[in-house]
Length: 152
Image (tube, rainbow, N blue to C red; front, side, top):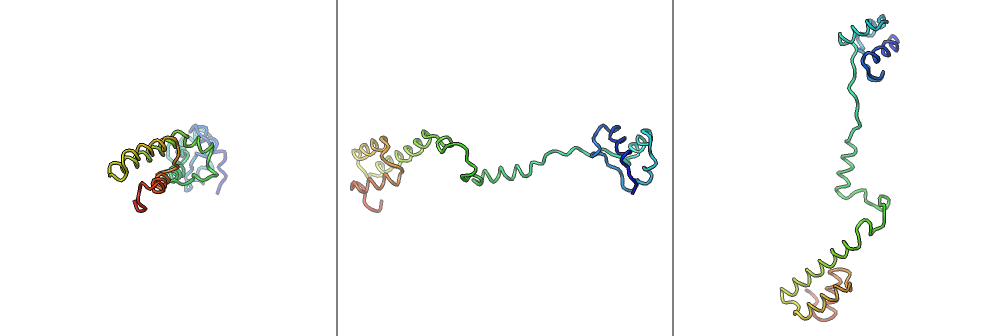
């Protein structure tokens, strides 16, 4: 197998690319060993013995797979988190999520006549004051106050 470093260098110059992108036909290597001038290399390029390989880009396959995993909720453990819990989900958003759920629960209980309007109003105000952590906590307090039976 002849050393074609000089031919590769000349071909790279003629093809206007790097030496790594020069493809030389393995079957024609013996004949190319005699090609020493730019004209010889030019004719080899015309004949298709020497070609320019296409540019290689960065593959997005791994990035797409990672993005799909993130969409499924992976890669979000404590080691991947930047910022405080409240910067990731602000206090106001947490409050809105919590209060809307509690108010919706109170409305449905009032609509189903499980609690009277006066109890609704009282617990609505307590919820507004931030007394309950969650819907479950609100239900526990309603039961403790004797406004709901145990299996409601």
